[in-house]
Length: 200
Ligand SMILES: Cc1cc2nc3c(=O)[nH]c(=O)nc-3n(C[C@H](O)[C@H](O)[C@H](O)COP(=O)(O)O)c2cc1C
Image (cartoon, rainbow, N blue to C red):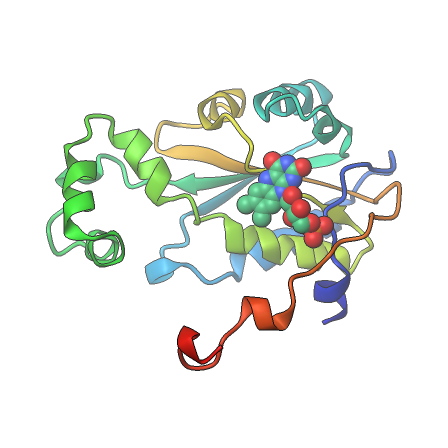
């Protein structure tokens, strides 16, 4: 609870690096994360090279402070390559049909660019593992910030990823250089309900 309640997104970092031992621990934390159908489609790139960090920050809409982090984790997903050809009984296809509706799934299947559709459907894949990393890092006094404002294709090119792996989020990590500002939380009444929403 301490790590969870005191975690904050940090966007300014000390120059101090992050040891390989800690990075190894963060990868173990990511590895242990739950995943749909136990697919474990998450892949993480550890980026320390300054030029590469600069390029990734550029791909993140010019959020230049990202390049000041000693380590940027590239949070990637392994895509279902050419998922148009998946058999009807494929687990992921069945789950997505149920979640998004048959009509929308038919639209997606008709869309000619398999990779763009697969990126959309894989959007959540790296997020829970990334948050595992964030909370494990917090125990070492390290903070990060999940970055979704990202040109996925540009970032994936910078990382020289194959076509069936895309970088969906960045996670700059470092020892925070300043205390976070105040954050107003929505009340528990606003963010929860018992049994049905009508009982609020
Ligand atoms: C999916 C996701 C995407 C985010 N993308 C960005 C981003 O591109 N740039 C950024 O500065 N913060 C980004 N954030 C961080 C949020 O702005 C931040 O979590 C929110 O303001 C709450 O602040 P806190 O993390 O300090 O509690 C993202 C967070 C999440 C969960």
